Length: 200
Image 1 (cartoon, rainbow, N blue to C red):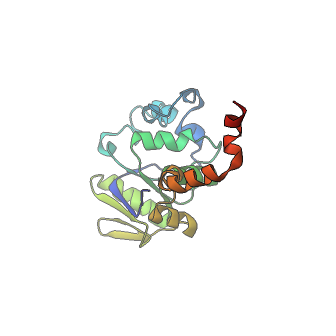
Image 2 (image 1 turned 90 degrees about the vertical axis):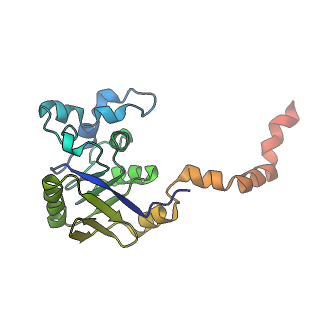
Image 3 (image 1 turned 120 degrees about the horizontal axis):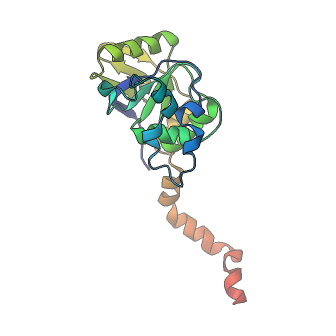
C-alpha cells in the first residue's frame, strides 16, 4: 500500500469556476478501451479555442504536477475519465476552492489528493505560479498546508479521506494484495467454493 503524505512539484493555474468533466475530457474521447492516451486530450476543446494560450499548452507549465483550480471543479457527469485524463497529463494533486463530490471520490480512488483552500489563498497561489512557474508547490497532508516560496496557506480535506492517503488505505487493490493470505484462508473455509468441483 502506498502512503501519500505530501506532494511537491511545479504548479499550473487553471482559472475559472464550474469547470465540468465534459470540458476536462470531451465525450468523443471516451471510446478508449484503457485510459492510456487520455492525457494528450485533456481540455481538448478548451485548448483548441485558445490557440495555444491554455495553461496545458503553455511551455512554462509543461511538467507541472499540481493543478490549482477555483470553485466546483469537476462538476457535471461522473465520468472517471476526467481525473484519469488529468493524471495521464501528469497531475498528481489538486488545490482548489471546492470540488464536485464524485470527481473528488474518483481522485481519492486513484491516489490523487484534492485539498481545498480559501478563495483568497487560491487566487494568490494562482497569481504567484503565473509570476514564477518554476517555484515548487508543496502540499503537506500531515500539517494540512500548501506552501509556495514564502507563501504558506492552510488547506482542508475531510479527515476520513486524509487518513486514507496518509495510511495508504486509499488503494483498494493494494489492500487486497496485502491481505492475500487471509483471503485465501477465508476462501478455503467456504464450502460453496468447491461445489463446482464436486459436480465434475
